[in-house]
Length: 96
Image (cartoon, rainbow, N blue to C red):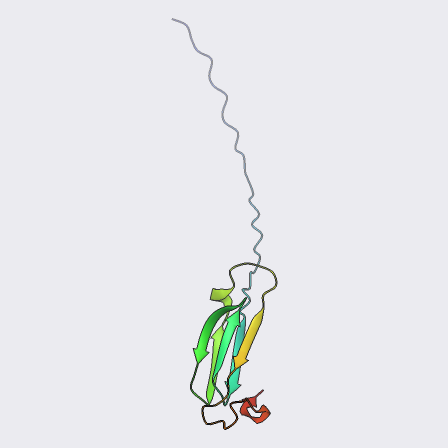
């Protein structure tokens, strides 16, 4: 009967895993509109919201509508009041 040599004892290998924790802060993009007139909000020429009532005060989060990184075009279109005699938007109708 042949005797098999003993297997060497496994060496204890200590692995130190260094985990670098990096705080990731998500940036939230939003627009706040305070207007006395109806308005529409567009991102990259896509309509997001339309408010046809007068005297609106709203904040809209834009992150769900930003489909890619990079530059985007934000447009707010103010519309005249229905009671405007000349059908034009007056400077005093907007609040900034």
